[in-house]
Length: 416
Image (cartoon, rainbow, N blue to C red; front, side, top):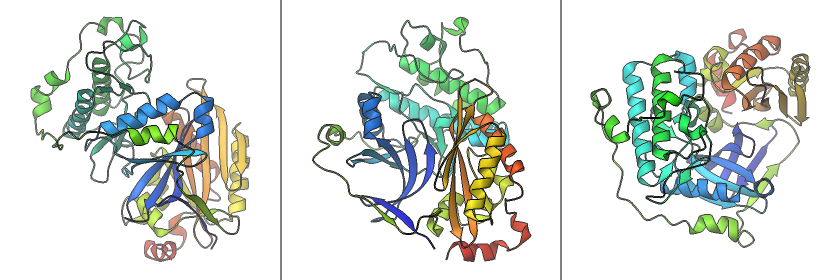
């Protein structure tokens, strides 16, 4: 079987689990401890070209400062000659957004529990002078135990106590506080609390409270976190999270990654043999399935609601690539293909912006391939519709488990 393995320092790097305009997020494993991690990979040339050095330094520094059980943990920062690597806690339960799509709306008790954890995390950020400014269900992850983890501090602000109003307009329109759009300055804490309120509404109702981004009537008053924590509805079944004593945070290593980059580089190497689809070992398969039950990987009925989606085929890898290319072109999408990875691009029907999808083919067993599909740009709801339509058009190459081997036989094959 073909083998393509890459190492960055002590981390063995696997599949891509997320992709944005300026970074990719890859699954990896610490070869010393066996711990699963997520690595955010950014090109130095891209960071310099878009003048993002200060923004990235701020994001890394903030994540080091806001250590909390309900915030994605930053382990360390590494650099090679061409890339910056941010080593993060691997959160395997997916986005809260996925759960909302699947269940439409959550129960009152479940909504309250997530809201309690969100408020605890946001309050901790504010106590450190950090304001997230882009709180939304897509930036709230769930761990294997169903606990909420706040992620993506790329738009966050770090201020000194008593620094006054913020002025940068940022955030997602449906969740952003109206005053953020006014260009008159805004209170970062109040803006975050507005977003928390919208998230709670979406959790319990299953839809947004409003579609318009500008509501002047709601400029005047905003509940504060200390008031939320005293509310009878909030305190029901509430168990405050325990965090250790504040430890002094040293940011010298963050500065060194950017300032003294010529001095120390992490070892970056690849072990490549014959060119072909990437292989996926049993360890990576198990992390994908969120446990030892691999059936979810091969059952599209359990998978279609995820932002990161996949299907399995018994057709040769080249046939899979050719089929996807033909279907994509028939859907009016531009196709960029490199080896066994494809990027499909088009225009979003909902907001006239860019819509992009990335597909990668993995060999999980002899003559058995998994096609990983993930959204790279555009609206998440539109992506779900696209994925369903794509699978309908590719039905002749998608393998249905009921056609042959049972799960037990499948488990033996994919773990060889």
